[in-house]
Image 1 (tube, rainbow, N blue to C red):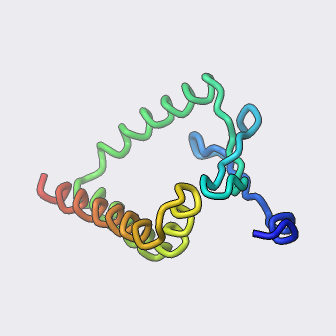
Image 2: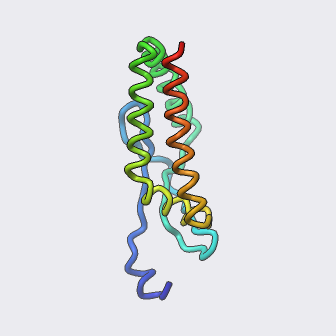
Length: 127
């Protein structure tokens, strides 16, 4: 990539989502494309306190999730699989860029992830 194109590229910045809120971390750290060493994103750096807050939020959410009937949980998992497939090209490109993975392998990884959600949804229906 030429220096002009690289300079024009906007680096995406990502925050953390903890307990239904977007949270800034203790600064950020870069995500590099391993092939080019180009910074492709910056992500929030978590403090130990933010990690604890995320774990506690997940524990609270798990209780609500466990109380849902299996058929409703299955519906959510199928919806996630559908959303993954709808964004397959974008997700595969991101995986390819972040891991220097060949695009067809990244596409397979995305599809496998969607299939796993569908599999677990059907497993939940059998409980």
